[in-house]
Image 1 (cartoon, rainbow, N blue to C red):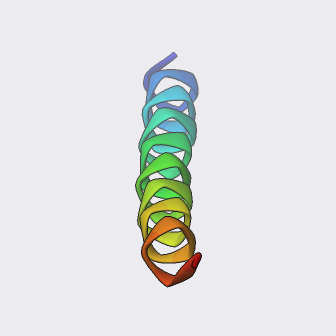
Image 2: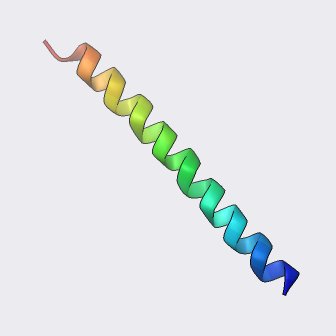
Length: 34
């Protein structure tokens, strides 16, 4: 089913976006750390 493939792609993209946000937050935290 095409809709199933699309939902899988959207989930994968959502995970990648979350990982990028987590990395940015981690980098910011490391930079702020004394």
